[in-house]
Image (tube, rainbow, N blue to C red):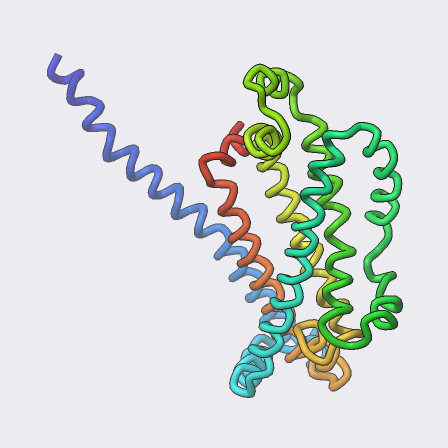
Length: 273
């Protein structure tokens, strides 16, 4: 009897060791992939498979990164791009999510507006570049406008679809509790679609980050996209790679920040199988 009681206590350290090893292995996998990519990059440059002006070496990129940081250009461009993405994305979310909530609750409105929303969703935001420059000239405004055009329609349609798929039983129960108007929206509708809305925000943010690079190449005098364009014109691909790496790191970082919203108690249920 004593052996049976002490068995769980004996297995506890083994279980803890197993989970620690598993967590370490999960952390090691992406590090190994990144190390493999860097090794392949070094090897390609060492074998001169491409000329140095077409594929800069990791050493050249590292030196260029130090130069850009010391000169302050990279920091200024990061701040400019983050500002434009933040403004355009916030405007898109503030308008797109309520629009989706309203459309999801009104069938006639969906029938009227969904074709138009889909038309603009499939229209590349880069097609608006000539109009953005003519309407807003050079600077922050055309870039913010392009981000809005790229993210508003996916956000509105994703929110609308999530609302339209809420089980009818939710609203019948809400009717029994006499929920109406704002109370129905805040206690039933919005909590029911919040997981899908957060996913839509992450996807739309990825779109915004892609669009800002293209927008800054033609409509701005600073920013990460402008930095890549300037490096290309100066045949400084080592500098362009620095900006590309920064774009990827910033995108991943902010996406991980948005992903933390999925761990909120009122949201986590939507991601549990």
